[in-house]
Image (tube, rainbow, N blue to C red; front, side, top):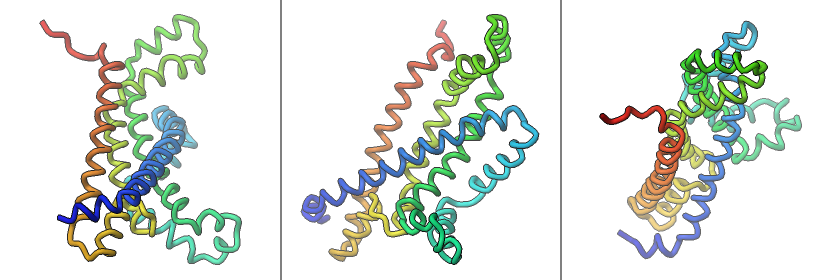
Length: 230
């Protein structure tokens, strides 16, 4: 185990951690912005939007993230009209391609999480909001959405961890994320496993922090849902 090489290249791993966190957090943020209105539209079975959103969700949940990333990074560049358009300023950069793929993927999964949370909201909460004279918009933003997001915390916590692990796909399109740095270290010094093992430990450390954060949020916002001891 060449610990000396790992320590000597700690700046590379630090940059890889930053790249991974950057892609993961931005993808989750953009994905959530997609999922919130999409999940509400899916839950309400809107005649126009619901079939389109169902197709979007099925496409990105039904195909691997690796394939989606390949299609955006390698596939779109095959079309001349894409290379000649303004979009090429973005699509020629692997960082942007990874962010687009990750965001759309996360948005699809989060859409279903929010849809399920909205559909399982007790009818009594909406009825109480109506009894208070709240408008439909006020009922959505003051009652329905906060209640649904609280119940969705455990499932969304899983999505955050899955997105973190899925971000390792970025290394296959030349980005130096955590896994990319580990692979580079192995190739540069002809190592067998040191770089990959270090990457695995870093992913485990970040996962530990994220799981702890969501456990803390669940204890705070889901206390009323815990069964009371006799």
